[in-house]
Image (cartoon, rainbow, N blue to C red; front, side, top):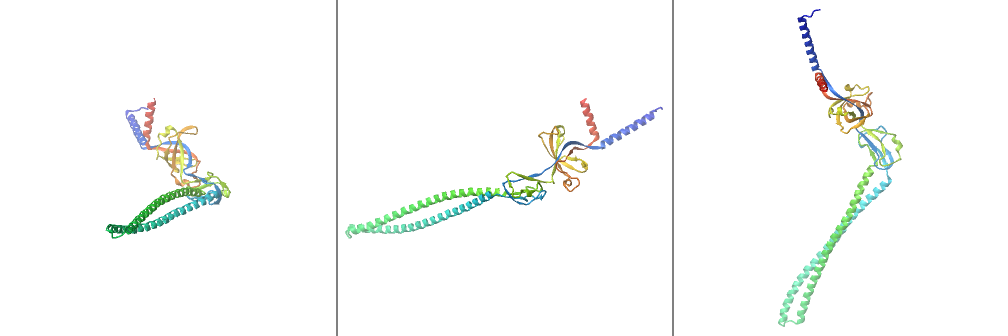
Length: 363
């Protein structure tokens, strides 16, 4: 068969058109670039139920697999030694408060009596000073009369003696007032010291009471978060002595599930927080069902399946798969693969070109 120039041209044009169509298709076709990491699903929030104060179990308010809200009571324990110590400390606090009141009342009484004596002496001092002033004038008058020989020496001396007695009375009253002032100062210092010492004793007992109340509150074992109680049969604990730190079980929240995947160092550099993900898990059909989002990236290497890898925490965003009433649901321990979308909607032509450049650089 002879190939004419016309046929050659037509064949060339057809091939060019096919090439253009192929390039156009490759340009329009887009795919996602992915990183696949193996791992395991885990519950994000697990709260251990631990006895925080020793005692005998006296009341049981929950059972295995109970759905609990935060602060719901699970068990109540009894500790007689703690109850006695708590009662004694309460009594001490009450006694110290009464003694503090008595100190203040006694001080008020002493101050009141001292103030009364002081007022009485001040009045006596005022009267004595007025009398002394009067007798001073009398002595002056009698001195003049004595010089003129109008009165006798005994009469003059008598008036002078009375005046000096009044001066002695004034001096005596002033001494008494000074002593009362000193007594009042000593009373203030003594009362202040006694009050402060008793107040310190009260503060120590109140601190002890606060501590004992907290210990007593720990006798009530409560849920620290919402979730299901995973434990053995709690009825077996009734009247059993439990030590501080003994674990009863766990409260698990089925509403928050993460996937812990492990990426090699090569894959890790392409992973970023916030990237979308989906999972291949047994009968779950990956992207059509379970979705997720990269939440955190670990920088400390770990060994996973014998390979040095870096942990990646991926939050599962399909809440409907947390429903344990479904035929298929996610629970801790299920293994699978997370397909992390590192780049979205990349043209196939670009990826082919990158591979060509990579091959050229290698050769």
